[in-house]
Length: 128
Image 1 (cartoon, rainbow, N blue to C red):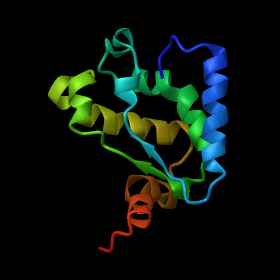
Image 2 (cartoon, one colour):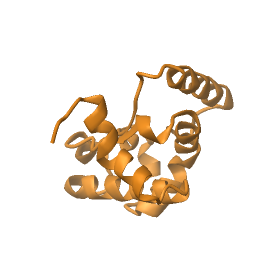
Image 3 (cartoon, one colour):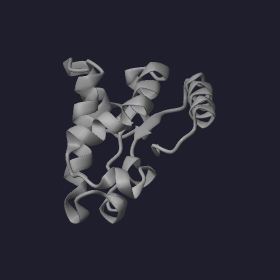
């Protein structure tokens, strides 16, 4: 997810995402975004700016995968190593995902619940 990604690389990445999405047992975890952004892209701790920078990739994910196969991934504690707010990066990542859901128009209870926890419960067969 670097700003330095060429169009050819982006096209290839999108093709692979669509191929993965074609398999009904493949899930997409929203995780690791900070480690993929270049250092210059992490100069801010603004979740809004980070979500906007990640939007081209997130759009592809939301276009390729149904909501029921997308889940939140905290990426903790790794996000604290490369994140924009050191030990507070987890909360920034949570906010980035929340903003991304809003940007995608996924504000209904079903979609929000699936992405934040429901999909993970299904994928990992967690019984609560």
